[in-house]
Amino acid sequence: MAEQQVATYSDKPISEKQKEKEFDEHTSTYAAFLSGTKWSVISTAAILVILYLIFVH
Image (cartoon, rainbow, N blue to C red):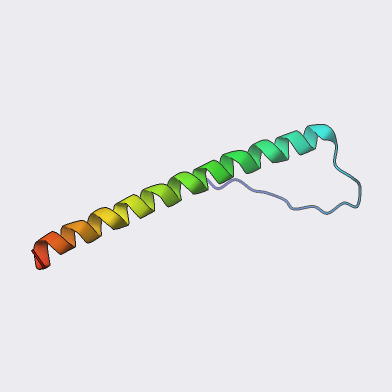
């Protein structure tokens, strides 16, 4: 089942503990984005090489 998330808004400044948690989440998300981008570029390059070898060579 899908996890339910509730968005809330507050004018209060966030605590240091919350900042650390937010930074950890951001770091892991960014690392996953970079990994996904790297593998999509590698996959695209491999597909282009294969297509070149099939149709041109």
